Length: 284
Length: 279
Image 1: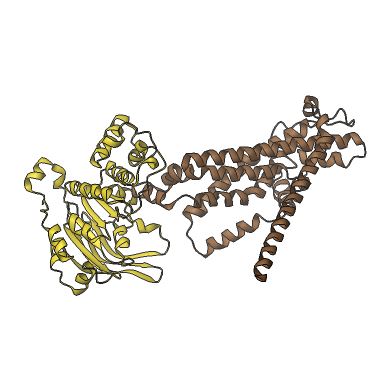
Image 2: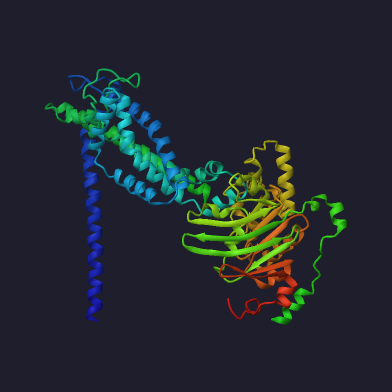
């Protein structure tokens, strides 16, 4: 009887501890977002989005940083998406399951955990200096592509693994080649998972600051990039720059820019969730 | 048990006659499978220990034996489905129409158009009924819609599914019942017009009524196709097959006319298995 009561007490204690921890996380998030909204919401208007950066806080906008982020996002997508998905397909469907494959697998998982600044240093050396791309949109995109490549590869592999082998067997047994099976069966069935993984990886890339600073993204760029070789700034760097200014007006600007950045990541995550649900309905 | 077996055996099995082959010219194709000293390993484990066998055209051959005896592995040799197992290794020859299908030059995709397969669990693609049946044709690069439509209808009719699905061919194949799904899988295989159909326990996931339908189907298909079927159901083997092979731990213990195997087996082991004394 005594033991029973003890167990029940432990059970209750753990339950309330769990509730407490959950609430702490949520409260911090709400306070943070609330604070940002109070600081920055009134600052957001069309001019804030379309204005170039300026010495005067009330006149400066995020146009160049926003365009920089979009350019970076675009090139990162067209580099990392095909490469990551192709590598994932290769590892899951083509490579033999031997020791070398095991080694590759461990390394890719580890790469996903390497601090982003290390990728920045790699990008600086390889893309900016050796390949002589300079502090350009292309160099930044290549660096961020490297950063999210392991995430895309792992997401692709997981999505492909979830396709029932009976579907593959059926396709092969009808005389389909490996590529036909991948194209007609595996990719449609795993597309939702792959897309979700890619979008989540990209929404991480859009918030990255450190590697881009190392590569040489500028805090102040007077114009939006017009081609991949142009210099650029991105939203997180613009925010970082404004926060370090003494004038109060720039703090407001930073808060407003944070709201825009959060909005972009929320929208991207929302799209990811939407695709996942839509795909699940279609294929199950 | 023995009595029951005899009653089943009294059902006349219609052998293909010369007249049949006049009416149906495809019967003249005498596709057959010849297995010469085949040995299979998965890593260090030897799954098949040197089997020789000849399978006649337009017959139904049943593979029976306890789980893990290698009968499914053996069946999958005929369309090279074991190739996808990384540790798989094979020695010996398997000839279909006199050609060794394990030669390096062999085009595996071409082989599988000749040797179709139906699996244990119904596995339709998550596509429409029509797309399921048309898949094998479309991957061959066939684009002629009229031709595909005709083939799909023909295959669904052969699989005795046409009347049930003709009004909603666009419905997902997964929306069908288990028995219908399996007939859809058979139709999908037939649409490619193979000469040999391998069936790996095709009715083990189905209810008795669906099973009876598929058995009836196999009986019909025998006229045009060579069928090899793995089954755990003794009655099924005796009902539908012309020849039966009994496997035990990677070896072929006995292979003969089904009638002989079930009424007068040569080996004690075979008798014990089919009467349910072991396995």
